[in-house]
Length: 149
Image (cartoon, rainbow, N blue to C red; front, top):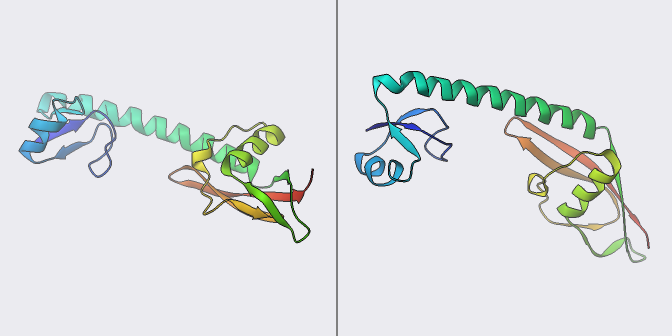
């Protein structure tokens, strides 16, 4: 069965794509939930319009992500945290702390879920924090953690 997707579905396709699915999956899941509609020759133009809108939105999102990257890559974000004599923090610096510091120092609002820290920062010094704002735009923000308080 061929259907046109109404929204992005992981493992299946993106909004406006015409995909082939098992008859049961289409009839019992996708169509009743409004996730897709049957693909007929008459709806091919509608699907193409959905794909064009998606491509335009994607290009705009990518451009704005690149602007944010150009602004944040050269910047060094400064954070203060309580630390012991050995440079080990009492606690840790989390993605939420990094997002808050980025907003305060550069005015750029990031979503903490876009920061991909393997584990929270637990020592003073320079740290690289990977950020993925778009599937094609990935960069690193430099965070300097200093002992304070």
